[in-house]
Each structure stands twice: as structure tokens, then as C-alpha cells.
Length: 191
Image (tube, rainbow, N blue to C red; front, side):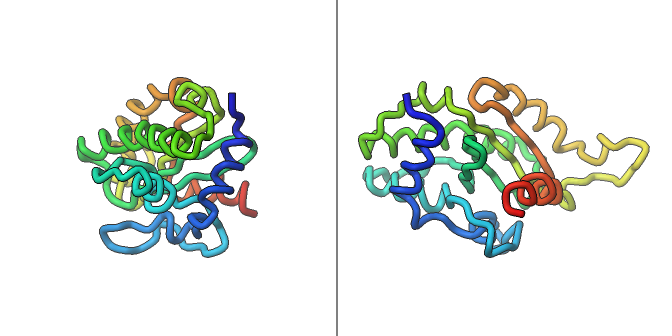
């Protein structure tokens, strides 16, 4: 069975050229602006780098849904999705959950292609977390300090749905605003 460190070593050996700044990884395709601007913070550009290379090498013509970034910190794989738009459509909620699962499947396909012995069962046992980073300004309905959950009316149902994946596919599923991500993740791992 492969360990988290072996998976990180595999990624660094085979996909080092897809380590990009968070400005590139968090870039919104619709308006071509990064959600987080910082050229010094680096992580794997997963959907437009690692997975695109895997898919091209396998000769796949259909797209696969995948998270934006992949990071490795404290023996944990972090699958990170940046959502700069409003998250109130049913398709958004299904799409995010699809990205969670297909990101894992895509990685296993890459392992297989490179004869790196780590199947889906092995990958599911590794310590990994999923983080959804959302734009707070676009997902606040009303600013009512007496009813804080009213402010996040479109985030709260998504949070409930995604918590089903806690300790199943991912050790932990975390949904946080861009500001919280910068404060609690980036400042912790990229001081």
C-alpha cells in the first residue's frame, strides 16, 4: 500500500512542471481573474495541468470533472476547488460533488498509466481533505447579524450535502470563504 508521502513524491517526479502559483490555479475561466492573487504560493494545477496531461497521454477525448488545485501539507493531500461565482444552482452542487469523485478517479488513471501501484481502494485509505473555497461577496443574501445563517442561505444546504463525504471519500470536507481560506489555510502553510 502506498503512503501519502509516496503519492506526493510520485506527483513531484511526474508533474512538477504543473506546480503553479495560486493566482493561476484559482483563476476563474468565466472572467479570467484569479480568486486569490499571490505569485509566491504554489500548488499543483490539477484540472488544467496534471489531469489534462494524464488524459492526453491516455488518448481520452472526453473531459473529466476535477478540482482546481492539489496540495500536500502535513502528510495530507488537499483537493481544492475555487468557486468565484454564486453557488445557488442545482448544477453547481452536483458539479462540485462530481469533481470530488472524478478527481480521485483521474489520479488513479495516472497512477496506472505510470505503473505506480496505488488503486482507488489504496487512495481512499490515504489522508486527504477536500476544500471548497467560495466567494463570500457573491454568496451572501442579506447582511443580518441577528440571523447569521440567513447570510449563507445558499452555502448551508451545500455544506450539509457535502458532509456526507466526511470519513467516506475524504477524511474531511471543508467549505470556507476566500477570506477564511487565506486566514486559516494559506497563513498556516505559507507564512
